[in-house]
Length: 426
Image (cartoon, rainbow, N blue to C red; front, side, top):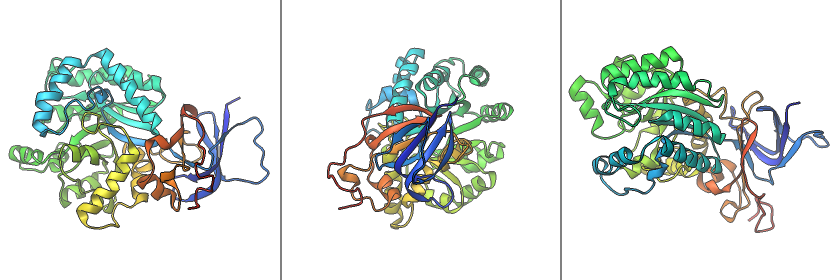
């Protein structure tokens, strides 16, 4: 008999077509899959099922962190408020050379996974070195993950000879493909300026051959387009396209310095994009033209980036920042509305990673990756619109129940309404 769980007494956001709000809803989970969901049926009995009371909170898909470097939580707060080149060359690179080893990667990946799960993140897309140790820690944590082996044309942890970088990535994919049904191997080529043309093409060819996602930092800094254009005469996106790298199984991360033509190329090729607003702001990388990407129909998700350039892995904060940053820059309070930002953090993020059929929304047959968010806090009262409440008011600490693949990965005591009133009352 498969274990059956019924979550009830909550407001359900499925993140399915039309973004419905279903009051007094339920979700039935059988084994590792969602079996049924919808409005509560008066008098219906759930014999043999374990009942989970949502306590009037919001039942929703787990959040998708579309870009992070999980081991880098060990560098949280190490070198803040510095120019990018100083931050990288004088602090982060030396710290990585000194502190990155199999044990530290495993330890701090586990730490990051605990942080993400406690904040309602049920899926992450990771990229780093010694990734086999990160992948094992992610599998053990219970989180769903895309684990990308880092590829760069410089000596790196675990790959002292960069001429072996593609061979090492191939070995990683072959050895970790069956590690866990929740962990999918990937290739993460660092950037167009740290990987040669030959490395980029070889990395993408390997990804195609193995049927895995190809990740790459793209047009992240103001200097990057100039470097690429000087050498190729092309924009960063046009250069990658000329190499045959852009397709629906390519994930472009950051995409800050794009123009209209670049967005058109991405749209034509069907690549996913991950927006990391807080990291971009902290490192003064710039503001990505995300409203234009969304308007063009690109699939755009959200990511925190690593803790060295963000300091936390809080997707509620990331949604809030994404919404407000673009309103301020565009002088338009209507862009990046709450529903758009919540889609980016759930179903659109899942689609960008190639996992849209697996997770990102609550639908029968999909993986039971579900969270419940407390709405009784003073900062969440009154609750006129759950989308607005989640993006503009909720905190990671409001998550009190997290399930991945039908297994509870995080829970804390059910909420108690401090006002003693209905959450919609003032």
